[in-house]
Image (cartoon, rainbow, N blue to C red; front, side):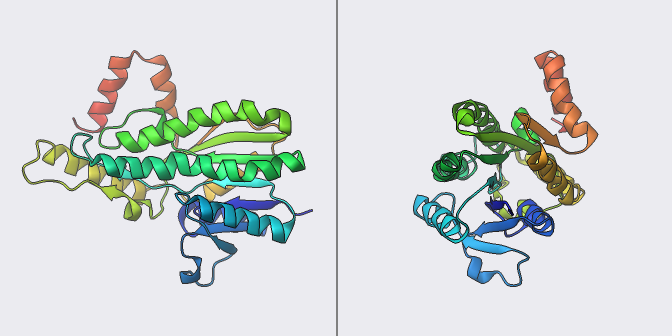
Length: 267
């Protein structure tokens, strides 16, 4: 039986690459987009879903289950970026990103769990970020949303294990996607005390994404997780230094690690 997969944010970037890869492997894949009618010639099915709108989440899950009779895998991939000095970033914009990256992911999990519980099987893969393991300058809110989702995953994983449902995190590093175009950028204000360092770091972030890895690496990693009988709690996908930065944070004194980050970001 072909397993049925739901990928939030499946219209572009990592979500699209993963969906296309899994489709080629024989999975029945549904991606999501807020406006799927505007997307032509997509390599797999798209349903309308906005992770900040519970009605659309419920409708999408209901549609898939009514068509397929089951839902085996959720890949919680939808997300958005945010950059800016915390002092100058509007708090409403911070809340908006938390609503998408954290509460949106939680609401989708809530929507699929009753079906997975009735099947006595299911797999939820939450896409977080290596940035979620550390507070990064001018990306602190994004880091916080992804770090929070990592912790939520640890908790819900234990809560649902007895129902036959498995939950795991996969944290990507920098990948060559269009994430930068969808970020909320706090403007670089002319009279800002952060003007120079923030602009330099914006340029550095964009360079990292432009030179990032091919999203097919994430597709391969997620496929391996799906084929693993008992997935680990945390997976990291990225280049050596990005993954090693997490190791360094664990073993170095806090101030030494902070100094390494400040040197890297020229602060």
